[in-house]
Each structure stands twice: as C-alpha cells, then as structure tokens.
Length: 155
Image (cartoon, rainbow, N blue to C red; front, side, top):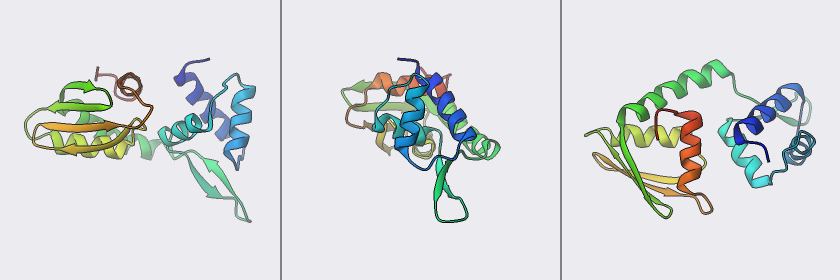
C-alpha cells in the first residue's frame, strides 16, 4: 500500500477534478489509483484535509477542499504555538503526557484541538502539562507520523 502522504495528495487531486457526492465514490476512485482503504481511513483523511460538502446549487452536495491560503494561514499560527510550547511527549498505551514550557500548555492544547489531529480523542491542559488520550485503534506512532507530516519539528 502506498504511503499516507501519497494517498492524501491523490485524494486532493480527485476532489479538485471531480464533483463527488459520496464516500463510496471516493473509495472507488482511490481504489482505481491503487489505494485500497477503509471508510474509516477515508473519513480521517477527509478530516485531515478539512474537506467539506458544498451545495451544487440544485439539490445535491459535493466534496470540496478549503481555500488553501485561508487554511494555511490559520493553521500556521496554531502550528507555531505547538512548536514553541512542546518540550517532550511520552506515552503509556493510548494515554500521553506532553510537557510544555511553563504557561504554554493551554495554548498548545487549544492548537492541538483546533488542528483536529484525528489520532487525538481529547486533551486536558494544566500549566506545563497536557494530558492526551488517543482514539481507540490509534497509536503513538500514528500521532508521530501526523506530527512529521504537519509539524515536522516535533519528534
């Protein structure tokens, strides 16, 4: 199976070039491109890409990508908060503790929530510590891969 990054790029290309109204149609188009993924994986990918449905003006809806400049600018400030604040990350199973610089936990926690990382079920911030719970079936490796793709400076 091809890498996640390639799949996301292919998914973006499919959505840009076609008016697709269902996940089933997206799954078939991805399969034709060599990506045999589950509906759950596709849903996570759509969330990562911030894909939404917009009206076709008649009686249906189709998938659409957000305007890149607006998304990139708003995400950029949240990514900066994460970069500036995180000192370390440690996990035990699906529970993680993120250590931050003093006073940065809340801004990092808000940033993680707004970025909508699909691996994270929820966060709770203290002053310099964030409690993270991963979604069922997700691992710290999944989160690390997402960080490498979206926030490369975080390891």
